[in-house]
Length: 323
Length: 275
Image (cartoon, rainbow over the protein chains, first blue to last red):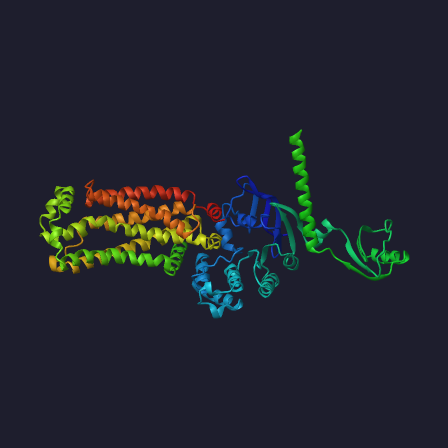
């Protein structure tokens, strides 16, 4: 994999608080990498580290071949960033906002003019180009901020919560744009979000963060295999029934709830066996639906595991201290 | 150092400042009072209502003149009593007051530029730009410094115009600027404007809002008030040499303050202060 971003044992602290804790992950060229995690997990700090806004306490990183610590301005010249808040100059017009950032990026005047016109038209803001940003709706501001991130046609784009606070229509538009960026222009996208639907739909690979740590990283199937191998089968029975399925080959887990049965199995080949066994035991099966573990389930399973580990280590530390 | 970045940042900050009425209205009103209203009131009202005579014989004013030293006293001896009052009031006693202008202009614009951007949460996008920390700092210093000096100089030109026109019936010639005003305008004014910016750079790390920064940094006006009191009580006379020396001391103070400010002006510190 041609890595655009590499992080090795990256760590960052604010005083005593560890915001990013020993992160190691690579992001390949043309990939959409999603970083998931609750607020305060360390996603924004990671983006700031990768753009040279912070200096890490430990670890190594490269972005587009540059070291963000010593060559931050080179990284920022080649990257586009959509910040968590649009961070636009509200007293300036849309055009003035984009021109300012084009000048700071050393874009030649003619190229900047053409690119700005193109982006304003693409984001349907060309009719409002000379209006102050303070008169824009939230969705329009987010579109303008996205236009700013794409201004220099960057090789790598960081999107920090791109749909936060947007209405469904504007969110859909932004998501389609991100999907389009991957398909049409092969941009590499580093997406920070806690919108799991968005992440599942857009990302090639995902990383799950919690309390500064990267709990897991991989494709959706890899994460699925990590958390819940195989697949789930949801069975609906006509009446409540308690089958005995202990010996069924390929059955990993079973959950019963009145006339609903949820079975985790190793693969699709187990489904006919499960059906046959249920019928044999007298269950009246109405439907049997295989389903993949959702990203939401994976995410909460990973977050739960981390919390459990943290609690256990805190308990053992407490016990050690007591001894 | 990329000067295009520096100028772009300064231009943008100025554009933002000119659209903020909370910033430019005081910057318009204060010079109007200092440059037009006060000199006109001091020249025209006593002449109109015959108060110039009593001012000429005012013992306090004469004591004050004596305190300014023999050099000034000799210089004042060449004026008629009516001219003496005008020169004394508007040429000498008012001179340190005029120095409030560069300090006020620079702190107002710099507060808007540093703290205002933090308050409106626009800083982060700027920090993600390719501009280096030094370019960001210089751009913002220029945004505060250059207009402050230019507006102060324009105010000085306006003041000279008003004094010469309004006092024409008394003098019958162009009598202003007096010699000690030249170092004040072209040496002390830039020094004080830079002082306003330097103080703002230092405090902007701690203060999150434009008003907070403005209130703190305008306390630097006390320095000018000290000058005013110092001259009024005869501690010193703001002549050419005192003006030059004072300017030099303020420039040294500027350099020290900016060195401290620049040392901690980096993206990490700015973000930490804004979060």
